[in-house]
Length: 420
Image 1: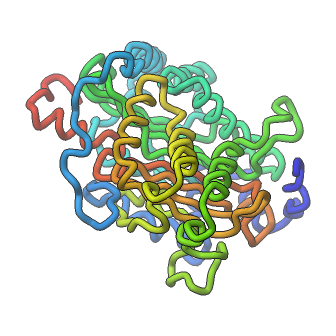
Image 2: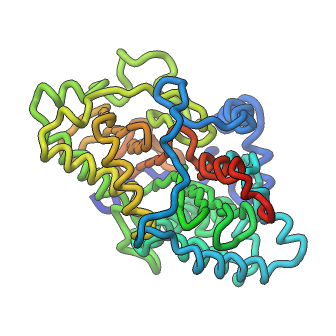
């Protein structure tokens, strides 16, 4: 229901907001780190994870070799590398030496793993866009636009605008705004050697790498609280994730009752049958979010190959909705890869599965983890999940998040001369 979120607004002077109001991102970062606070507990748990040697998400702890060969793209499946290179060089050209140094990292730098989706700046990687001149912001976002599909770019910018709207609604514009995101560049932009970029902040994180005409776009985190803008210049923007929600429900509806029961691993969003820790204080039910680069996520629920044909098509459509940020060529390549592993794909569900219900689902195979979860309030006052607070996560298991498997293959082939 449009505007439903407004009944959950905190009072203007509520401690949840008043202690943050007016702080700049760096002052808020120090506040968020304080022991004993909710944010401090999250930071304490997440910080040690980021520096671990990267292996990749797996279903059983064992990396499978051969899932991510670095082969030339099929005709028509090439990434828009020339446009990306041009946009990246335009961004670098408008910065001074200090700005270029802050923006740029080695292509295999551990800083890739510092991305996070909360509003507090746990790591200050790259350039903070809301602290940059307008021309730098414009060129940074031009790089994002050059790398994504038109519909993917619209979704990313919608998420950022909703974040700015939330900041206005709760009066925290200094830490929640349309540009309260960090952007970093990895490697040297060029036509063949691996390089990429990273954008991250509240409810929006993208990690993009290209090499030899191929593109990896993961991890990706997109979310919104609330899932709409009902006032101001962007009023009418709403239901950012309605497609992903509807596809999950359609898949469940297409299952026979017995298979639906198999897919539902827990009937309640917080279920007494859940093991300790299954609902994380920050991530809630999703498992593949920030700092979970090496997490073991066992297959659960129902094997997609056992589903009726209509449900299998819905499962592929779910995957398509998550990889829709990719430009047409890399998207086609990614969908072929996902379809090739359909016999090893699983689908699981938590919560209700009627229209209007809140729920969690995960589509998982050796080459994709796609999660959607409805969440409790963070900057709005509700302690049970609501349909207007959505988190979605996309991963490439077995080592190709950040395109890392491809980077390693490139280096192992001895083609690393002249790239960084």
